[in-house]
Image 1 (tube, helix red, strand yellow):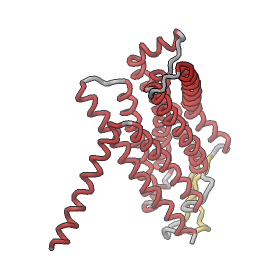
Image 2 (cartoon, rainbow, N blue to C red):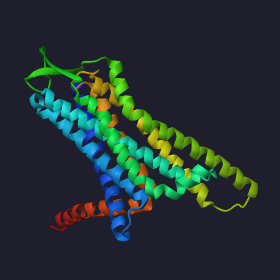
Image 3 (cartoon, one colour):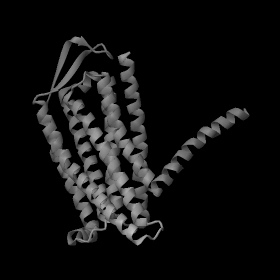
Image 4 (cartoon, rainbow, N blue to C red):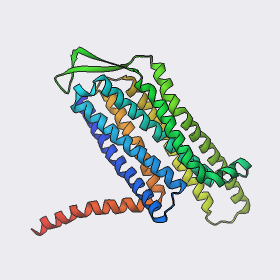
Length: 316
């Protein structure tokens, strides 16, 4: 029964990853097409391309990791391959976190209506700053993922416990260092983008509160585009903050090898980790008409051949 539940959660994780690939692929194509048509790479499109690319590769890598662990167990637990898989996985994780953090900072800078000189300076120079912060965060992600390649994992066999999926021995992967070192390594790449998230959220909420008071004092009674922009940005930032924390809670036990391979706990963590990037991409698509329109066209074209085949069978 437990094995069936584990396989069910893993199947859900695969479906979620496929949805995430579709969502991030939609964002990538829409943003790239917008740049090609306008012949200008805007700050928003640059962040969205960077975000969707990192998420697309992250979920592809997660699926590769899952399939290797299920069907190529012997090769998967070879120490060098395992270390490479986890190091690249952490680099893609950190890149995804940073790109989403810069998106929240972009919302804050473009939408919040603060009059401080530094904030105005950021508004005026954001188009020049975005490429540099994306490059810097990529280098930082690479640097913080390197410790996972420095002999952090200890791969060994447990011949007393046969694997439930194959006839080979069950392989266990543990941290050579303590569990607290793993937390430190993860926090090194996650803490700074989390701070950017929190600061952006606080500033957006404060700007919304100030703007709402101004509207109440003026009592115009008309829909205010700035107010709607504030609310939409806050929903996007806070939704990803929830996904961010949930993803981190599921990530740490997987890296620390808290659960046995193919156990229910491991399968649930993998399902949650697959759901979070996919969920945030759907939030972004829902908040942007350009993304919604492209996804609707993709789904329409995908459903048309199915309808055509069913009509042919009916006529036949």
